[in-house]
Length: 266
Length: 366
Image (cartoon, rainbow over all chains, first blue to last red; front, side):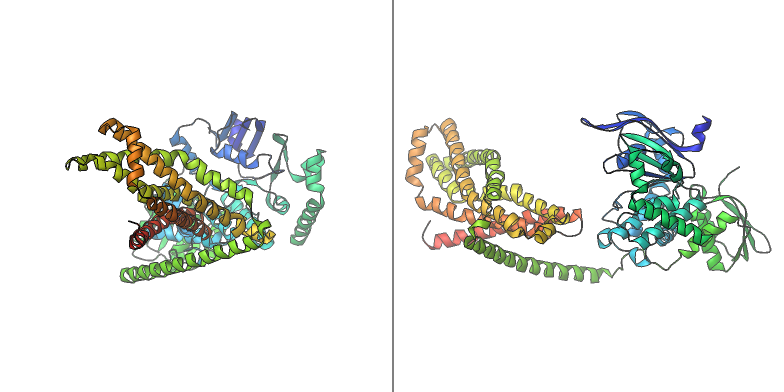
């Protein structure tokens, strides 16, 4: 029980399969409160499926998923709603509602859970969330189809942050962003994490993001989480995929950048 | 002990906030802050348990509007307030609204322009198809036989069941209604004239065109629309494959060729349906029925039907492909365009049918 209190998410013995194709087998994972956990893995190793299992969009074939100490599988709708209020999810392509403007998209969760907020306050909250996510004010009255991919992602983040969640799920947030935008995204996330005490479940392929903001990294391969730890800890393991991932040309470049940034700030 | 957010104001104008300054615990705090009569001189945050960005925003807004200073904020609260202050930019939330009269006028104008553009676009599309056909005739190697045969199957063979069933029932309905009316004049036998002529001349082809518009025209629009959304059409162009030749011509060609066949089949099945009704209900044996049909239906009725069919087919396929290629933006548009394709196709088919009726009677094929 003591261990459970420090963990925002606990996954035990998870199994997911589509027909004959087994995605996860006996997968365990813990996400501690207040940490940014990066989840990496090759394409098709089931990173998104893992996220969907945790947030309840995919019912696993076997295993337990616990969020904030509440089991997520076969739970009552009321309980699930109480938990959902405490998390925000950013899908890969933003998943904005196409018939609503960006500002209205951000207001959707607020209206759903806090119907008593005044119109004016709703608008104000939407505005600063949008600005905080790094979108320009002109984007607020626009419809998703009028935005670029990167802007849609930021709008999606603004919506995920609408309820000031304790737990944030991000599915490849920096994919498709320009390097400046991606760096700003990292910084924003680190800031929010620090001030709000956010727990972040971050699926990413972006090595710079991993070095810049992740407290720990979980590696998905062979249908399970093969290792969890800080990057130096992972580097000490001699799993071929992990070695190739972090010691490949891109991994080294990202490590160098991280080192330089560190040296510069000291 | 955490509790609902609250505040007190003392006589020096210091507003002390307390409790959980977070979204779930705000209660009516925003309204009460708005209702403050005297703007506070200072805002004291020492008494709060927790704060989130919404709480920080309320504090920031109050400080901004009243010019009050903020004191007693711990590091986290200070940072949050700074963050939301940085994010405080004048923003419009909704698209600009115009007056209702202006909106109505704008809609009328917009629909007129859209209608004009659609008509122009359709004519242009017809031209593009003609050019495409011409280039295929000149370079027969570029003709995509496989795609056309595939469309034959989808548009024609797969439709046989539903078109047959529909026509059979329509044949029965015509026979039944005709018999009821003609019985009043003791002219029940003329039911056969009614069935034979109306199915071959009008209903067979018309109902088939409507069915094909619903089955295939909509499918064309949805298929091409999703392909446009997924940038498949753009990918084709960059590889050097002409979407006109690969996607549109096979569909148009298949529909044009198959509509007369389907229409003829539909007429025959309707005649069979009517015949069965006559046999059962009016005691006209099949041999007599067929004999009568041959006597009373002029061959020109068959030509009228068969000449109209390919034109209807071309219209249905063109409307579907044209609307599909107009899709841009989002998935909602695919739905709208699919609907537009079916409505347009059926409308144009009926309009043209009226023209054909006038034309054929004026050349004496009555």
